[in-house]
Length: 446
Image (cartoon, rainbow, N blue to C red; front, top):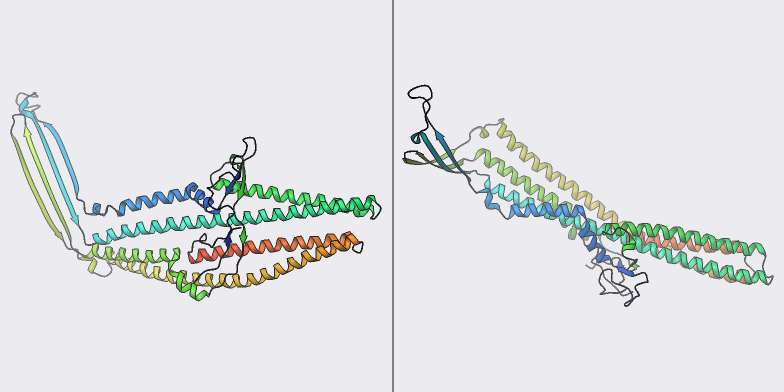
């Protein structure tokens, strides 16, 4: 099944991240830099402190998983000592004699084997798999966050372009009214109203530009840049092209539910708790073997040296865990209960995930229908404004009516852009719910 999703049109494919837009640009000019979605995600991933900490946890867990032999490694010890002995109050009293000097050296090895040792090794491996899943999930969530911000900035850029177009129309209308007023074809009030429309359009454009620059600056901070001035003028690469998305929610649930990070994490949790239960049973009920060796050497000042090697092998068989109600027996029961609770949590998570997927797919269908209506409304509003402007030039339409149609046209365009952005963000939410990479999209040249 091919998912039909949001499309990012590539403006200048093959360019490196933040490469100059115009080769050979003069040093005095402000440089223009291109920022693509892929490079933005790459920079945010490299810059994220939380992701770096997650990578440290992953590295630590990986090191433990690749050194499982440490669970079998015996404890080793070595020691050395000096001693001196002499009478103090008897005999000849305190004396310094070579014969009173003594020394000792010893080395020991102790190996303890319990039945739960294989389970302990498996738990270490599961811990590494869990950290790997957490890292991938954190990286994907960061990518989705960056993608949403990138889409929002693209929409804001389109909104700026529309406001500039509106300002151009207002200025042209003002110029036409000025000429008409100069020749006595229109009144002063009509001319003053066109001037007010121009100033209003300038104000709206200025406010939108300020908001866009602020949002872009915050976005660049996320990517590791202090100020936008450090990179010159930043131009986002790509345009939003919305396409209808159609899929059966039950098919999506069947294909993608099992690979959701939260579902995978819950299954790993169940496996870890089952392994922990096995380790608890074996450590408390299975016999344990202890093997130790001790070597000791002694010498004195006269040059006499003696040593001794001893070994010990013991087998311990616990009895109390087999008696119901004892602490060890209760520990086994508690471990089993934890497994059952985790299974119930998994069922609850699966039900929540299925409900989320069904809700998102239903909302996407209804949102696309709303977008079609909004697109038609914008086309009608634009055509209405064109006809009204012609009537105004012919003197059959008042200026207030012209301004009203232009306001409705601007409002319909804004609603259409907001709807397209909401649709794109909803697709990203669905991709996150399905654990599908939101950047694996079809690309078209702009």
